[in-house]
Length: 526
Ligand SMILES: Cc1ncc(C[n+]2csc(CCOP(=O)(O)OP(=O)(O)O)c2C)c(N)n1
Ligand SMILES: [Mg+2]
Image (tube, rainbow, N blue to C red; front, side, top):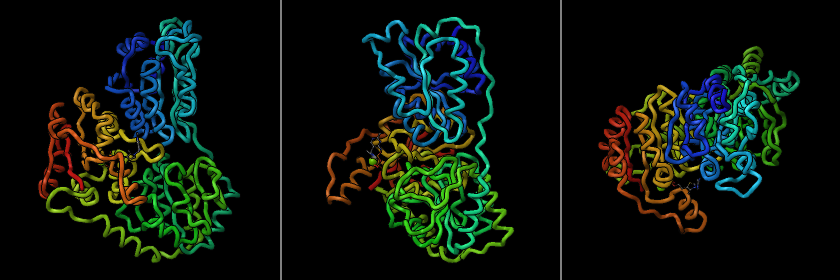
């Protein structure tokens, strides 16, 4: 078997259905091997789009998404999306072609040291310098990308190795390695602090959604009435219609979730990554802190847990639920009612009659026209903050936000990947800045027959940055944009497009868009 055929056979063995990528000369063997396989190759318009697609596929399924590029410039274009998967803990396998081994010791056309370049954004990576290591390397790439905490891995396939023959064959795909059960001594210590607490609160992160511990979390909340604040990436772990949900942490300390945390007498974080929100913004410090996660806490004086349980998050929650039921533990279930009331009022504002709208007032309409299991993918900017605070989420993995690496440009390629990998209806919400970074992937979407809705919040500005500058200094610089006519732009790709100008048109446009095929709704924003 040729090494490129073997690599593709290994991908098939891992259950890969899509490879997102952009061709180059040095991957000719690999491309033809893909052509002759069961896998669908999805050609993209910029490698960053391919990496974001693989990233979002990984977030939604737990199985590594696969992206492919050529050497040099193709590989460096992939880097941002790979870094996003790395810091957002999304399983991703990147494959890059490379020049032949005989020329890599020299200065050479398009050749840079991609393995070293990707070293800081991957859990593991290697060069396939012999066809005989392809089977083990692919298995390892998937195993390492998918085990807790997931992330990116990378394989580099030199052009000459790709065409060499080998006798080795694909290794079996194995289920993900389970995370250990909680340590009994640590559990006892947590029980004793729970025993003393009257007003405990949970801070729930991506780890709960990622490890499918949502049902366990909800059982714990039902048994105890302990309120929950989620991170951006933990959205949907508890349904936001539940009165025990205190919605989503902001980046400042002045919002209701952070105020509730400050008033609690015990904080238990579950599946929380400090890459998402700096604990200095929400951790009151003097309150007792318990860390439940698949990995130990980072060492940081603003986040210094009294007790850590490093174990499977769902099993830990189940132990604690059983114990709370056994001892009939009683916590105060009244103390957070006022926070909940304020949050409920905040997420229900009506849009203005005429555009320009605000993101916050558009979101209730968007929520209304989307079903509980439709998926919203947010780009990064001021609209993302509003989505985190004002878009109630009911089910896990139905509000996808990048909040570790927090890179602009994820929404449109994310929409492509989500549409190709799930049966859900998809909405990709984006700002004008992030949209134009990867708007070329609309062509990928139309070519692949994707159906999703792009909601484009247009303020002709890098809005979040000017907001922050104005907060700090009273003025903004370097943020103003002039945009094309987005409706004409999208229509030139054959995409059904709308620009509502009244509250009534907004509702009709959003409703029609989410029920139709590939569409764009440009929402003029103040
Ligand atoms: C790739 C990348 N570049 C720069 C930033 C810094 N940044 C964060 S939000 C933002 C502005 C986003 O503007 P837009 O997409 O229009 O959204 P808005 O804030 O206006 O809602 C910028 C430049 C980033 N997060 N990612
Ligand atoms: Mg903007």
